[in-house]
Image (cartoon, rainbow, N blue to C red; front, top):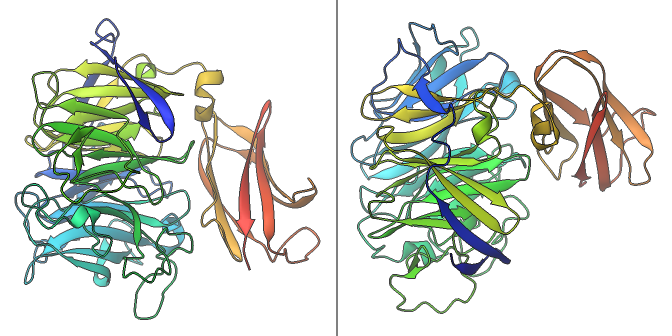
Length: 485
């Protein structure tokens, strides 16, 4: 056991051998009749359709109904003629707008050539066919030159604030020869954050007002949210805690898991995990260390694949734990953060070449085997009892987006069972100013729009802090939101 300082807390690392071996936990083919060509991303649209979208590295996105009996897929988007694919290049990321159900926007991350570069762009679904995108609707947001063919990152995802987060590797080769990860004038080796609901000048996006380098006079990229990262292939949000879990692929010896903070410097190329790598010119004293690392040896692997906090219902053994894997060794682990203690548990010895994890609309977790093209899910002891530990499965209220907002914002929540639901807005004095929901609702996912111009007494709200409370019989949950005019 060892103790280090990370994120301002004392973290005690404990490694356990597989203590789940005697449980019922296993994994199984989620869609036995389907096979994909080098799958690299699994997503859902969050629109209540219960569909799954699988991205293939070559540049094709397939869509199908989320059923074990599904026998066929449809091509949602094919941009294979635009995509430079092979090795670590290709169609690498897919994200659906939080209000996709109404606006039909989705976003992709892919590499192309002449010159070799990463493209972040927006597409729109067909107005007549929900299973087909409009190929000619592409709007390019970002183009980032790639000096080498590897370390392209590839994850794009919307945070609880409604902004789009983008992971970019350090540009490639070995050892970050251009020191991009520590160079704040370069977008490489970073996680970026942009506002895709607004435009600024010649940009097809805006810089969020609280981005750490917004308005700087040093030539730093204002899109940067965090830096000092080698190659974050996959990151995810835990919307219950607003934590960002990122798995950073290592160089020669160490793979790491980080909790991403705004403005945080995660040390690469000065450090690989907790270990010095190339400290020439490294003078910062604020490097954030990983909460977990594993070595390139028989106990670990060679290339980490980040996952999600498990919130599904098929495997209570995994509930509330971060599930991740190694692409080369095929091993899967669960990691649990309890205050200052990190418990890492080995689950499976060989589950294939795991390229990505993904969730469906019910938060069930899946993973893809890049080699055989199959999608798998976990199966264990079903979650049948709702208690204090797993209450979010009964009622989960998300942070509104955008936040801060003006004049509108969206409040999302999920119900595991049919319930009578009330959603109210209050001011800082506890006065009720709006009732958005007051009715019986079925289990599922809901997005409710709040317009600050439309309140109970029809008086527009002024700048300030407000609260929204979601209530079902026997339980309530409240979150804060900020109106900025």
